[in-house]
Length: 160
Length: 438
Image 1 (cartoon, rainbow over the protein chains, first blue to last red):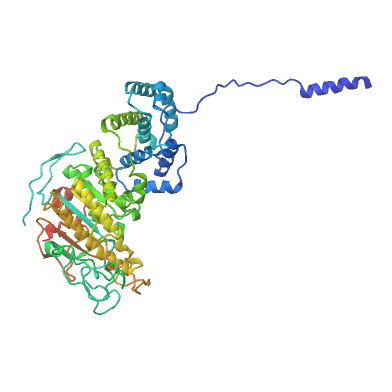
Image 2 (cartoon, chains in turn yellow, red):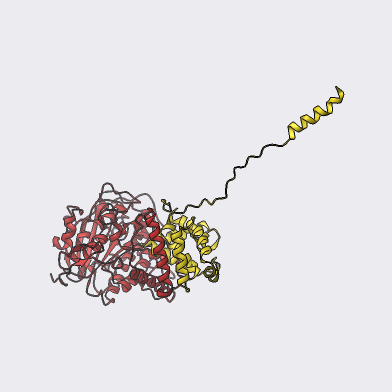
């Protein structure tokens, strides 16, 4: 009986630490960005300004500055117009984070994919992507700044 | 009455509908001053200075001597500017006009307001009605004079401006109503110049980049247009987002903003000779705006008088300055060639103030006044310009004539579309044009 004890011990070890069947679900990595807008909620002016600043500068805007900018927007009738002037002012600051124009013209597809994700938190449809690629290719003077400006001023950007 | 102007031609309106302006225009421009933030009859039209309010016999006098006839007080002067040495406020601001507005135009010395509150009063001044459902922090329920003007004259947004002195108390909401047949499509451009051109504007607007209209702005708008169209086609349509201007108007407004910052830097804004409060700087920017756009309708809000809740001396100073500001405004209008002799200016307070004071004493131990009693419903009105009978006084303390609702129909009458406004049925039944009250 004593001679059987090592075997019993070995069998116990095997039963505890033996091979287990691996479960593989085999899911592909997928982006969760929606392809269409599906946005129905209007951002508050404060949200719009904070997100705009983060998109342009990759930095948060202080609460005081958000309030100052909100005041300006509330103090002007044509909101779209005053947004444009605010964006023009931001674009004149030194540390605005813009990709280079040469990179955009070298690979407009990647630039547009990045821009849609950055501003609109989604992937462009094929039609949208094609339109923008053609537009950039046909307009060599278009800059990344103007593309960013258009996105920041778009109606969709007002929503989340 | 010598009514200047011709029969207004029909216009194609933004809606695409054709309206004919229904009457003769007496003037091409109206400047409508929402006067000042709760003005007691006693210190304005009745010229009692400290006599009634502070029970100081013999201390009566007129501190609004550009608007009203009457001699100023001779003692206890506290409403003026501060001398380098001596009593604070003891230097009255020199009179600006050669003649008073009362003499040059007409005065309704005893009118009636419908509410003792600011926002309700201002609402009535711009809508000609009083809605029982009207809330604070809510756009007017009834259409405003801006919307009537734009819709019935078919004018663009840059011809209709609301120049508001503050962001407080919901005042900036008054530039258009939430009425389904009017609304933002016919609203006025709003400007709060003390904010837009103040320190906040300096930091966030004054350094705006200037883009080339064809080479930069045009492609930017083209891309924006594409984005907007795809957003719209996704079914996520944009809700009404305030008033809009045409591209041409937008460029004009951007030029105006840039030029105004530059003029401010150079000290060229036409501020009144004494500009030491927000009402007066508001008037300076309003004049600059009128020089640029020559609006058909400019509504200017003043409200510094409202300090009367806790500071009677400050109230007197603000009232004296409101008179100074309005005089400067009228004077400067005569220096704008397109508006000179073709502008009628109207002023009406949104409410009065109480008969009895509250217990708050100011630096001079003078009592302050709120607005909630019958005396708060006593207001006055004045009008000056071509076609306005000079020296006419309608009504008296014992015979009130005119209501706060009259302002809208009076403006509509001047601009030639009074009947169209009456036919909407949305102006209160007691309202009358002042020209019809003569």
